[in-house]
Amino acid sequence: TELSKRLAEDAVVTLFGSFEPILDNSRVMKWKLNGDEVTQWLELSEKLIHPVAFEGKVVCVAGQRRSVYGWATYETLEAQYVRKSKILTLRFQTSLFGTGLPDSDGNPQFTY
Image (cartoon, rainbow, N blue to C red; front, side):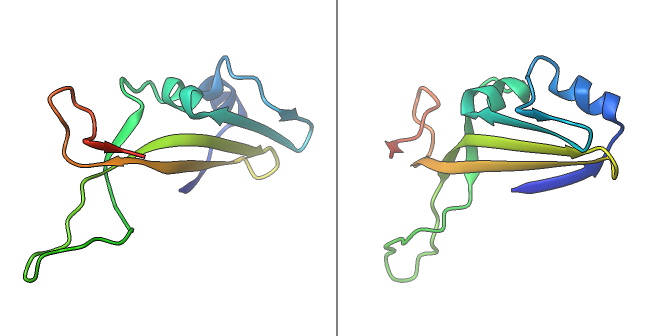
């Protein structure tokens, strides 16, 4: 998933706070966060995203609609701020973590 937004540089620096950029020069600033850092940066209470669209193959009984409750997790976030245009671009990479309705502990029934 990719998002772009025009922001002032001080707002971007505040947004990334304690995360050090991997590149910071007169043209661009870049950050790369791992899955745990993305969860921390977004201030999420859990690491799993659900429900998500499931695009794999599904076996269904005749007459039933395809329905899979999917779970995902953040892999990385790559952020780039171009100083001249003042555009911040965020690229989130996620991966399928599991499927199935939440169990009694709030976790997916099947994990990959």
